[in-house]
Image 1 (cartoon, rainbow, N blue to C red):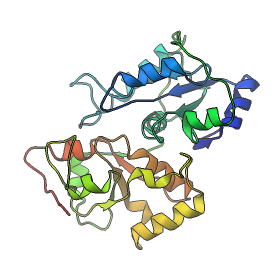
Image 2: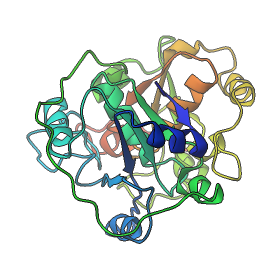
Image 3: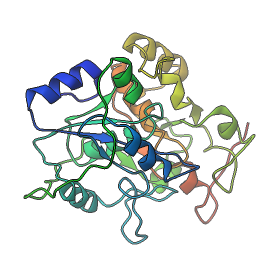
Image 4: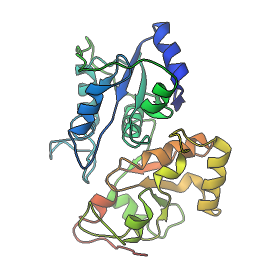
Length: 287
């Protein structure tokens, strides 16, 4: 079972083995939401299905959301039903990838673990690593068929926290917040996505891109452990809750902490987009 990362060569061997497997292409573009499906149709790992951030990995129904923000999580039972419609089963290994530095595929990695499914891994380096290895790609759309049995939800393997919990933990030693957005958005120097600029008071900043090498693969575990140690400065790693703008790009930091051998942190899925729009207004820090 692969639970964190899988290499292109390992994925090729897994496909050849005939073991139950589903590969998900999570390519997306916030500025052009239709582009993900277009790029998938041009080239994808053979047999992969496209998992769209807006329509598959977020809730479109205001009364059926497990979190707030710009990309609200669907209810667990709704996500399980969506998995059944594309044929994903509990006995399958899931492999997720994108063309976006592990930004969007991390969302699906986390969501499957949220349903209690540990057998999910990120294709390290994404589609580029697959192609660099000289492995074939397919084009066109992919037809899926519903699984005969519902996807069974198990106890969650991850921790999800809400706005009330984060607000109650401000300035408390049991909570360490890490903001995964870029420095300009964290500081409040710019805010292209949300109505308020800044960050949650006391949050540390580690842009999710810092976890990857130039080729898109995750950095070695020892290097990640050293970098998180420098960031935390003696704070308890078990106290960490990670967020970003809308609960998506937070996940590479979660994966990186686990690769570093640190405790699995919580996810504040509503993230800054929920925090800054909550009424009455919550505190904001800049700089």
